[in-house]
Image (cartoon, rainbow over all chains, first blue to last red; front, side):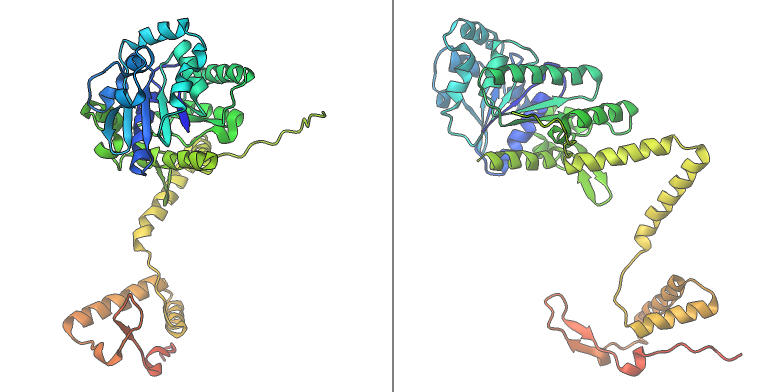
Length: 257
Length: 132
C-alpha cells in the first residue's frame, strides 16, 4: 500500500506527518519504507542523519532498492534524498514510460506500507509519486492559500485518473490546527462541507513538533504525550492528533488489504 | 444511464464532527452579550469544580432514605449531611472507636478480600422526627 503526502503549498507539515506516521506504523509492526521525493532531503535530517542521494542511486544509477535503503528504526527504512534529486527529474523526463518509473520500482518493494514525502511542486517526479500512490494524504494548513493547494492536487489527481490510474482514495489532513481562531473554523467548515468524510481529524498546533525535528527524533520518541500526538482534550475523549490518524491509516490499510 | 441528481451530504469522520460541533458552539457563545457569556462561563466553571467533589457509592435504600428524610426535616442539603456522617465515621475509625471486625466476612470477589455484612437493625434506620 503506497501513501503519498502531497500539497503544492510548502510548509504545511508533509514531512513531519510522513515521519510521524511512518514511525507510528513501524511501531505497530508494519514494515514501512519512507521515500524522500523532495530535493531538500529533510526526511534524513528528521532522523538526525545527513542528506544522501538514495533516490538518485535508485533511479539514475539503477541500484537495487535493498542497496540504497537506510535502516532507521526496527521495521522502518528510508530512501533518502538530496539536491541530486533534481537530476532524477531530468533523467525521468528523458526516459521511456517516464510517468510510471517510480511506480514500477516500488511495486516490487517488500514492505507493508510505503510513504512518499513529496516536494511542494508539480514536476515530473511529483507526477511519478501521484501515479505510484494508492492513497493520497493532503496535509493543509487552514488558510486560503493552503486550501487552494488542496484543490490543485485534486485536479492533478483527476487528470491522472482520467489516464487510467485508479486511486483507492484520498484524505485531507488539517495541520497546525488552532481551534481558537475564527479563520480556522471558517476554513474547517468549508473543507468539511466540500469534502465530507475525506477530511481526517486535524493535527493540533504544537511547538513540540518543531523541537522534535531539531533533536532528530520522531514525536513518538521525543514527546509521545504532546497535543499533536494525543489530540485536543474534549471531556474524556481526545480529538485529532497523530495517534488517532494512525488508526485512520490502519483502517485504510486493512480495508485495502 | 439515468443519473441520480439527489446528493446526500456525506457523513463526517466522527472526531471531525465532534470537533466542529464544539468549535461552532464556542463561536456561537462568543456572539452572545457579555452577561450571557459570563453566565455560561460561570456555569461551566461550576460544573468543572464540582467534578472532584462527586462520588458514587452503592448504599442500602434504607440508609439513603434515612439521609433524605433527615435532610428534608432539617432543611439541609443531603450531600452535607452525608459529608458529616462520613467525616465523623473517619474520625471515629481513626480514634479506634469503630470496630469493623464484627462485620467482616471473606469476599469471593477477586477485587476485595473482605465484605462488610451489616445486621438488619443497623441499616434499617428509619428517620423519625425528634419530638420537640
